[in-house]
Length: 479
Image (cartoon, rainbow, N blue to C red; front, top):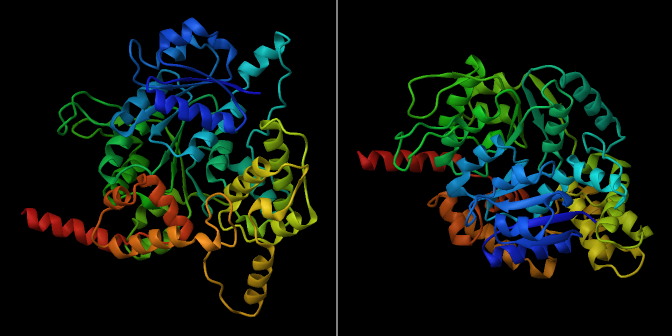
């Protein structure tokens, strides 16, 4: 069982994080400060240390040096997000912004432990525990023709320094592809910095990417390096680049053309050597034609393209992935081996999986947690097999099915409980013309990233024309 140390001075957050990780099969210890962690634990015995950036007595970044080869994940709030860049320069394996979604935290922990087996290997050397077999470098599974084509293209593209555009629906694994390209490139030993352009407020995106000089704006009390500069020598992955504001697109275009950046408030440019990988689930060519994405930027990033097929088009891969995930989840949760029932197999292979691989993973995890026996049925997966079959018949007859959930697993409400999703959808549609994304998120009581992800899942696009009109209107009123 993987061992994790959580260092957080706020007891409510520390306990909640410990329970979250324990529910996902991890052995969790906790401490309220760096000195307490040093006093009570042998830091080198853990597989991962998760620490808040700001702690009483000493910052969480002190654990990077003290933990040796053990990876350290830094937690930080949006207000101090720029400090996370400095943390990564000091050796932190990654950072996660608070408040974080539980799924994002678990996903980050799984990825980091899989990619950094150093602590496991050390314990095996001491005879404490045999090391788990290392995962495929890409972490991607697939035997269908489209996936084999993808693997072939990755092998050819990775050694180059050309810009890569990864296209695919939400949940298909675009970040895994970006990591695979980086790991197979000549920059594999350097930093890979991942940025979700939709998860950072529009008012902060330029300062996050390009950095700023002291005094550049109110609150800029010190100069800060941007994420592009932090990736110097390595790779920058811009996920959901289609959500990047037009102003930031112009600055990004200059960086691509000139290989240099200029911090906000500075008159001097800095040369940087960064390999750029972009990803989106949107059609950038259509957005360019509609004036919502710079056409010249599209041509600059559409150099080498990797297309990820949706899960529903991957044939036998779906069942193969489900069985691999099932084995992984049973091992992680310490359960005896489990198998899929014939009805579960039928449900998995006939359901359309609008959330793709991520949705399948959550359904398998839910089924393993809730099942008592050694066999998983379709009901444990949260898939109504009868409704799936009805919708297939409707589709074959050319009758469109409503976009309601016939899957009641994680991320989907059961049919009889659709009122929450209905309320969310109705509220967003009724107020998005008069509210910003930040205001909508605050009213709904969710993070801006959560709002964006629900938009994708429910198929509610942002009304960018309205947003632009609102900004112009506010600007003209201020004049």
